[in-house]
Amino acid sequence: MWEYKKQLEFPVHISKPNLRYAKILITQIGGYAGELGACIRYFMQAPTMPDLVGQNLLIEIATEEMAHIEILVAMIKGLTKGATYEDYKKAGVEDIYAERAKGLYPQDATGNPFSALTLASSGDVITDLTEDLAAEEKARAVYEHLMDLTDDPEILGPLSFLRQREIVHYQRFAEALKHYQEK
Ligand SMILES: [Fe+2]
Image (tube, rainbow, N blue to C red):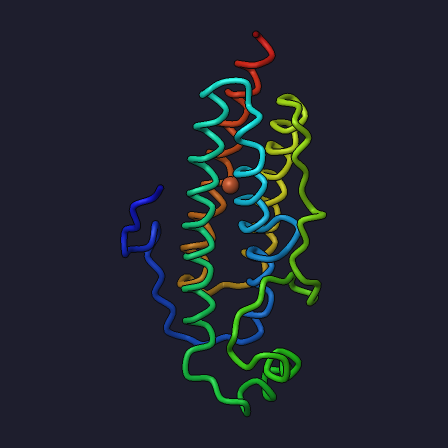
């Protein structure tokens, strides 16, 4: 079970709405490299890890990925705060407004819905951890792409934190992989 702390893992203060950016940022929830896929992947893989080293690590990182979804949701909330349908039209993202106004939906930046087909749970420890290493690198790369597309420090701060966490996760998966390879 979890104990929920009513605070973000990294603070989010977005004062300037940016609907176009909200539209692309959602990819780190619902895209192929997003936090939702990472979270589900790790929860699904955890039970077939041969010992507690892998099981505990996967549950721990899956849990942190949930906290990252929470950060992204807070960012999107800030980026869409106070926006009217006229603002969606002006920003050229009336497609988003037409579907769900300010409602969030797990999809990528081009509108493809989240799919569990982007992840695997093979039952093989080496295969799964190798996939997890790649998943963390994919997430890091997409955070860097998103950082390329803004110069707003209120967006860059949380993105930089999230990018850094992917690197830490990569390192922890690398240690677990070494543990099992040596076994
Ligand atoms: Fe991660």
